[in-house]
Amino acid sequence: ILGKVVEKNPDLMLWLGDNVYYREVDLNTADGLFHRYTHTRSFPLLQPLLGSIHHYAIWDDHDFGPDDSDRSYRLKNQALETFKIFWGNQTYGTPETPGVFQRFEWGDVEFFLLDDRYYRSPNRARDNEEKTMFGKAQIQWLMDALTGSNATFKVVAGGSQMLNPLHFYEAFNNYTHEYRQLIDFVKRQK
Image: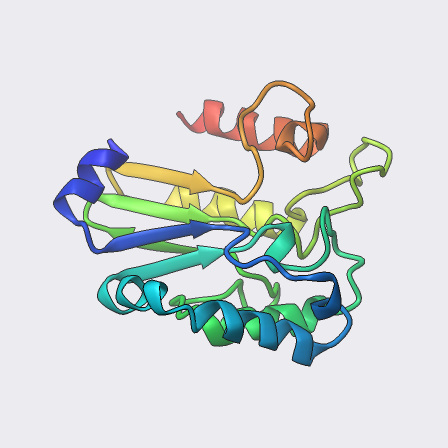
């Protein structure tokens, strides 16, 4: 379905994270974060793509902070401000809940893009009701937004593996309670 939408509307690009890769030297200052984006965005072959279509972006670990980073990254607020400068998303989070999550419509499809880093518990945290990839407020926002959506098709996307049933790497399934909450909600709501 998504292929047909993109085929009919070729002027849409989704960036689902790791859009830039911070280097070790970038990670300790806001100037370093800004420098990496400036450096990456100045690549000449990228300019035609950036200037010719609509772009919607979320992040994953390498454009949020260090490898496998989570809510404890000390420059997470500066990372968010840098991200906002370089990505012209229509919205960012909600007034009460900052982050890069957003929703937008494109034809008869509504996209729900999630922020898998700003509220993420450390990967090694005990897997219980407190361990979260998206955070309670963002999950509630998503469930409310899906319930209120009138779009024919709905696409939910995150920067990490979302439906992989295996517990490899940083998959959503490693956050059992939150994963089950969202999957059960979608099943109930059909």
